[in-house]
Length: 547
Image 1 (cartoon, rainbow, N blue to C red):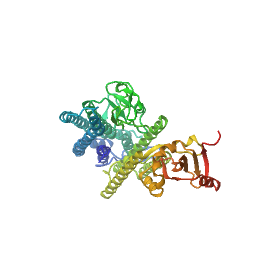
Image 2: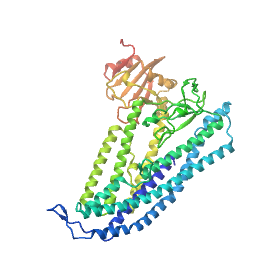
Image 3: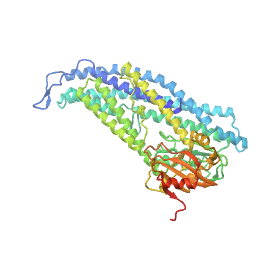
Image 4: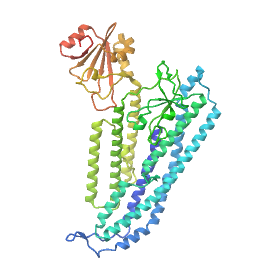
């Protein structure tokens, strides 16, 4: 199981815990003798008095508070036991990543005599100290959050009882209306997992995610730092990904010196690399590199031995992806809150018509969300819309769990495919240099192993030219567009003979798809001219044409 999946398991525990606590609040509000002032005086637009005893209902509900707290404490204890085991698994995986991420480059450096061999005893001692401190810190934080959730659940229950009683006594709302609105507000607000010094309240889901992911990343970084220092290294390279936060985007893809040395260095191929002092990065700021919920990684960089990873997107593309990602997260939170609200309303016996309106609202939000995904080409993560199975029947719970497991399997396969695509990128092709009539979502070009095998089996005579494909797509002599398949281009370049590379462009909105090499073969001048004359292709670019 990947580190991300292990972290998600802990986050889901707290999502399920909060949902069960909220549903327990709704259950407590609905048991016992009902408040009977729910008849409406249409003439005076107010509840009819004398049909029930609000004070009695309020007193009875408040007496239930101790019982609620006891039940909620048991719920929290049930999830807390699972949390300890999950946390240990997360940091076991973090240790593995921290120990192995730079192992290849360190081993190569040791063999070449430019790095020191790491003392295993000193390394083991340092790593144990890092892990012990991290696990203790996280479990202490989660225990504090558990106490906050218990207090928050009691406070929210008491607040609803008093608010509903006051509104009904004042004649401003019926029992059902007051309860429905109170439950709706609580479902949207949720419980408080942590209150910051500035008064900001964190939901248990958000706080858990921040705590576990930030501490995990810090642990990996600390282990890497120790290994870098022990081996005599000084430089690190920060990873890059599309959709990085504004502060993180300032540092991603760059090389830093931990000691503050800013002199230029060279990579494996003698290419000059600019170096920044680590102290000049955004590290240490909450929204900075490796800050709260940061998704970046770092890699040891050894001058003369490492090859710098290149970013394959612009700042504008990154900023656009970041905005889209934030909007997607907002849609997911809204959908979860609406689902939770409906479950709580059902528990408190809300009017069917009111529940139906909320279900329609959920459907509208889902429709809007799917339109957003279709427009942006982003991938739907159904697990982020799931609120847990605490309110479901055994059959429905089994179905929901199976659905989630199926999604996890597909998500794993998707990530594997993304990694395959990333490894298969051989260059870039910018169609806007040649025409404005074709729009693509990416400049990346991939050549998969399956296509290489296809080319060598069907056209073995061009096998020795496969290494020239990056140059062909970068500097073609001629570009032709197929008329029947207008997203398919022929890129032709003369290297002894005319080499034709057939490329399928990604003209969709899905930015995960790339431009793909699908064929390669020799092509005589007569074949090229005949294809143009009979209308099979049209000319997009010819370097021999006069400008």
